[in-house]
Length: 176
Image (cartoon, rainbow, N blue to C red):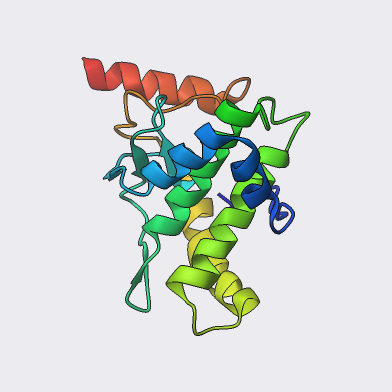
């Protein structure tokens, strides 16, 4: 997700729509994913997705209600798009060399916030309010333990980082 993330750049406007028209499986998945459950489980960066893409997770330690609006749909929109373009389009498979998937997910999250969650606000003002609300919470969670992460959490964003080992250790602890 963008809030709290180092790379907060947005992907090109309209690019996800173009990809959806080029990749029917991507389009079908993104349509179906709107119905997939949003579950609570500890996640680095506040949100995550299952390995099979059918469960989206939001960290229960986050306050996700801003002015009476539930922000979870925007958080999971990012995770859903990032997972899907990686699988169906081979975009963003390696974060360090190809940030496009993350940036497309940032754009989808931005659109969810501005078009669906706060349609009466200027899009940039809606995004700024969203980011200012979530960012301090996410920063506060960065150094904390990750209690009860989902057993099937997609680990691709964390490979090669200290978070990978931290999550795996927490998952093992939960099994005991």
